[in-house]
Image (cartoon, rainbow, N blue to C red; front, side, top):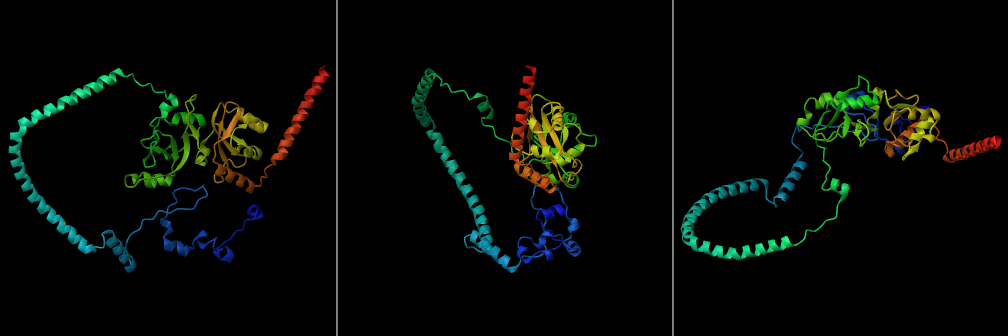
Length: 402
């Protein structure tokens, strides 16, 4: 609280403490309801399905039940819209009209069927009389057409086939390729063959809740979603997907990648990383504030940017691939989510697989924890000075040896 106050934040215990000029921004709905309001709204029936960590507002799903007729104004408005949609015809008149039209249509269809039968019988006699001459005329008309088509086929055979330019591997692979829309597919449990290589690679503990990780049906298991226990047991396991379409649920925990050299083809996803960290025992490294700060940037980050202990940890990781970085002192503080999904490359460099907006949020949290980012110009000057010192030391050694 002292830190946030020093940064300029103001805390309001209740809506009554908000200044009048700020009440258009800080509204009464920002504060929790009283006990009486909670009972009146029956908030005990609400379910918080998923913790939010994306700096967004909250959402409620409500099932509304109509208990009495609409107001007179709303009823008049609905009738007016109905008349406009039917060209000014009243609702009752429209129903009567459509009923009479259907009756006339049924009567007319019976009479028309009788007329069609009589016409069919009379035309049958005429068709049999004219059948032989008509067939003769048809054969004579078809002969020139057949001769013309035969000539066209001969010309096509003489023509050389047109050679098309090759499309290459990329073109052949992406030709007419469309991404499958899995947004309306059901969530189903992961197959048993997916887990052994993932468990081995990241050293997942035996208590790892595999049953809470699901994939989209009819897909290629590109993403493994972490589903909260309440959503899975109270909704999915009770067959909610048989009645409604689930557009989105859970957080991305593992994503498939194109790593061909290894059996494990799933990397850790930043979105649901806080639910995986408690069970990871391999490919995880703790970083100081300075090293953690240097990890939070885009592009390749070479090993020499970090401290020696952190470099040794990277070298002992066991090869390229996905790994985790935690902030020292906050390894078990899952609510602050001071974790980074990183990628180790073979050229002694790493990448931070975190979105830009979440990078900004992490840096803001580091500032709230008291970390002051170093000045880039001072760092560059210090590196230049250290480089000159090393160069001078090498030259001194060469002079002594000579």
